[in-house]
Picture 1 (cartoon, rainbow, N blue to C red):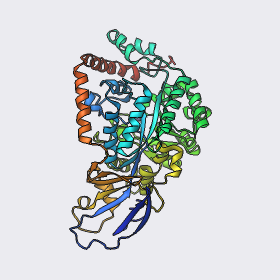
Picture 2: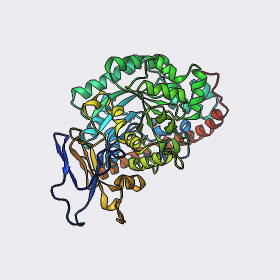
Picture 3: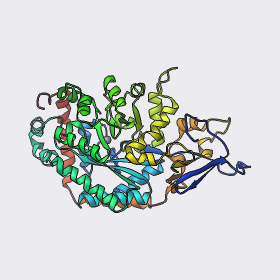
Picture 4: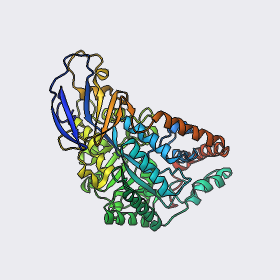
Length: 489
Ligand SMILES: [Zn+2]
């Protein structure tokens, strides 16, 4: 399948690779004569335009069934792990599911070493696994507990947990200059040490409610000066919509535009609650929206208005946001979920297959690779394109084998990571026989979990903190439902 959804699949083809590029696609000289030879179907590799490169699954840290606002602090519950182990395990799982380009908005620092060293560990992990990552350094300077100043949020909590919550979550602001300097330091290390092929350094303001205007303005300026991408969450939940309308009556998207942030360099994660006029403006400015369907369901956020986004001409891209419908980061299952939710009801078509494929494999490349995306054409299999593709076990996918069927239909109906046999990124085989080649994924996982269990065992305070987070979650419910943060911003 050279461009699924746009061109029909062709049988008995061969594909050759030279210097990381697709050199030829031609009829196979000798079509397989017997059914004994395993049949495989080739398709372009995918891009995951919004993720955090976090290996741990939410339910494993007690964060199931929680809305985003009370789920967030649980992401810091487990003690930090070795950053290489944690990243390599996440990257291995990602490539095994066919993702060549992975966005890593690095909101959870593992710690225990200088930041630049931790960034280097991630770069080494990407090089060893063989994927490409966008590394967005998380930036924020306000509102650590809820969508209001920390003192107001603390006053709304039961007194017994206030000190612990303040100590762990209240923001300790770092100046915009220092935060920007850190991005420059990481970028210098990545370029200087030759990791540029695998890592695109980006600015990662976490969300408008967590970043002051001076910080966002400084990021907009620096992004323009350095032609460096920006990755930002926007309008993920109903509470964020309410906060935005209250705080920015002129319109939050207009506010970002006035700051100079809206450009093709920007990727916005979510936009679940964006309105038509806001979508029109995002489309006009060439912004990419990363849609995270299963994450929005998991965190009770809602369903993104994908048909409206498409109608307004928005550039949209698939994001897994460390989730997937089975908490397994399975990009093909995510594709199915997004398609079934957004393709339209009855005879209506609100998302075509071509749009779905652009969403899964084409649009997200720019989010991850930034300006490099132009030099690395991909998302379709054609001569001269970067050799990023996957081979699926056609016999397993078409195991009934009754009628000739369109492989793309079977892929959309039932394909999953379990069908992926081989993944090639930039001409390098990074997955073969369903196994990651550059690292020992099983051993990595065992070592990572062993390390985490030992650290949790050595730190009994973790359990008290978990109980505090459950209490915090209970207290935040009425706080948000009653819109108690209004008037405090
Ligand atoms: Zn996210």
